[in-house]
Image 1 (cartoon, rainbow, N blue to C red):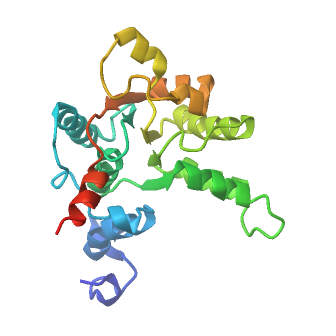
Image 2: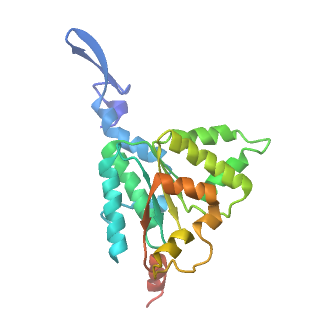
Length: 248
């Protein structure tokens, strides 16, 4: 039932119940039913990814299976989950899919306030506030990011860092860390130091820039402290889909 036509609350979202002789305001069932829809609308999930769920995530190897298991456990543990997630892997292996599926599940099952934003878009939004005709200030953007219970920062490192970018992102991440707000990251770049220590033969080997090259040592250190690393391997799924579409 649409809350605007609800006979119980007449569209206010509140009802009055008499409990032990006292009138107490409570949320109407129509509001609770619609709460998840409101949270989905506010989560800024791109239209392309709105259908991403745990159920339709395709498993092609053990790293996918492990990543899915960790993602489900993250949702199960919330809100007592004490660290975020950092999905690392090449393009097209499902990092963003799992990050958004996690958000979808958190909203549906836990009514968590979540927000998705691309790393490059966040930088551009902040930079745009420095224009004289901008209706927003950088504080408006920071406040929006700070208050989210769960933030997904997609494509971390996609924009090469500058001193300003590094300082700005560190300010955001450190604020969320200090206030115990969970953050989920995705990145195409592995930490090179870990790679050398483990001597793993995988797609990560010698793929160019490492994560620390893209975001700086200080930010890399903070993120590794506040997140569980989830490595994902495999071929580019988008490339496979594109190739299949050209077959006649």
